[in-house]
Length: 223
Image (cartoon, rainbow, N blue to C red; front, side):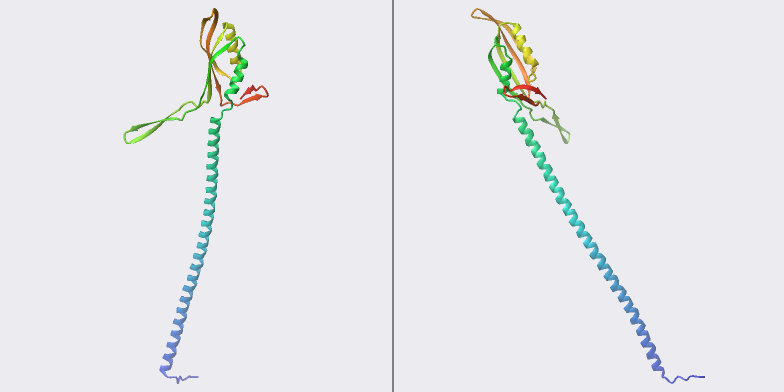
């Protein structure tokens, strides 16, 4: 069977043109839809990254605040320790009156003290010397003793060397005193009476802890 196409040529061309336009429209629509979807995906990813960055920034801010609080606490602790050390240095663990009380109990009745001096020796700041070496400056620290002690010196009269030896033994064996030593000793005559004039010195380390036994305030032991 043969078919005869009675449609004009112009109609067929118009139809092909319409189909081509439809195909092009579908292609363009697909491309635009893909671009729109890609844009949405990029925006969603960017928003997610922004939220992640904000969370990280918030976490870092909180950690920094914690570190600042820790540093403040550390600085306060250092200041308290420094204050305690200064107070410990300025307030020795033993007083002059306690030293005199112990010394008075150790001196025999035959000995007469004529002069007595006590002085505190505290640590001094380290000395710093600056020396120039070509274009740079070096700082050299000279160490000094850090001991904190009391020096006691007294002059007295004794009838003989045996009494002086008794005094030195009593002071030297006492836990309060250290570096007990005779400075000088000579025979004198006063109003027909022969006696020994001597000078004695000792040190008391106030960096140690002294434990007193009430009520006479004798030293029980020294740490």
